[in-house]
Length: 474
Image (tube, one colour):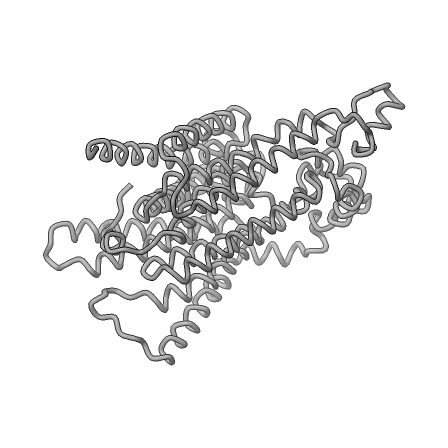
């Protein structure tokens, strides 16, 4: 029996490293926006989820979150499938099918105006959910959850360093192909600078957390003990990767991405500074005035970073005002489309087809909008009233998870705040861009969120506290 327990632990570790590796592979080929890369990511993650579910069953501490996420997955994918089937009655069908019948004699009628595209979109919805569920299955302890976060943070730092080198040496090349857009911006492994900015912003927060943990571990390491120099070397490597993430974020020139990251930093960094204690042996309650001074200094430092290093993004904001941005010009047209189809939606993945009939001629004739540049509005248009209900439920669950994490965790509380700050970053940027619709980033964020949720709902114990003081390896 003991040997079986050992074998299950080893197997879980193997699957955990496979999970981290699959998330990394999903990121690298342009965020898996190409069909081949996306198919590989989907097949791998679904297979890993099935194996993990059969071997380990439902997670114990995060069971209720697992159940709600599985429920949302079934409801959203089920409704997306219903949108594609032929309806016996036309009262729920999109009015476009009546026009198709009159003009071309088409007798098919469905909620979606493009059933094939909507059916293909099921996998795009399911993949992030399956990634999140798999992460909950594998992150059964704080140690394993922190391994996932460490792996994701180091991945972001390495990708940022690679992006910097390529942007400096070969700015017209994207990985191995010729770059066709955003030639003046760093996009790392992504095609779009806004997706890159969301990823690099999240990577900056992750690397900041890893730097905090490694410096704390170094300060608690007994002087003269073997391994202290190696820990110091790792500390400097982490600091360099943090600088790479931040620098790459600034060079992305994404106004919304940089702004959302600094909002998240204003939530996370001041608290981290106040609680940046070097060694547990010297912890004493700090005077209130000293804590307030640290808070104001941290806020001032974040604002100073924004004004000094975000010059290119601020210049873009001055040169191109909000009223001149096409993404804001098309918003009234999107609202009109939603008001006409608010109940059932037009079918997931049909924005490009539907919006062409609602586009304001005053927005110009250049450019084809195949995305709404607003995750919430495009979801509302595609899925109907079900989407805002699901969104409110998801945010409510996360709010409850973070609140419980703040109440129950002590030494790992900064991971709870990290999850909150990162969620604010992604949620803000999703209101003006489509980073969450890029499979690579959606998988990355889902894996990150699963590890944070596992820590929030985990229970602190002696083993976890001792493990916290030891540096993690991936």
